[in-house]
Image (cartoon, rainbow, N blue to C red):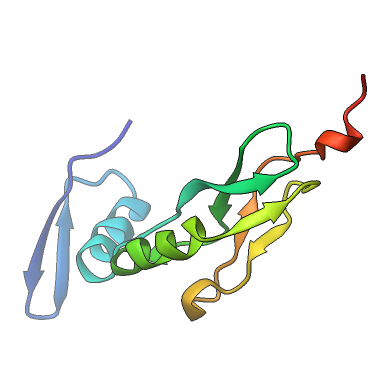
Length: 113
């Protein structure tokens, strides 16, 4: 469930209408001034039981940096085993945000038969 927000710029800042809580007002202002996103994606992994490891940023990235972040993420290849929460890329683009694994993936050589 969401709200249909209307944000208008006024002399002393922004006015948000249509929100049903304070978070909605803060979200509307942030979307107008500095929109950010968490990036969920995958990276290549060697010797894993899957070919791609799910990862995400552990914080929000400014929207204008998303494509640069994806270029870096797409150039990375990790080696299995990897545990959930392992930092795959530290402080991406100097944002203070890390890219972390969202799945534990054992090495193929560790797989029980």
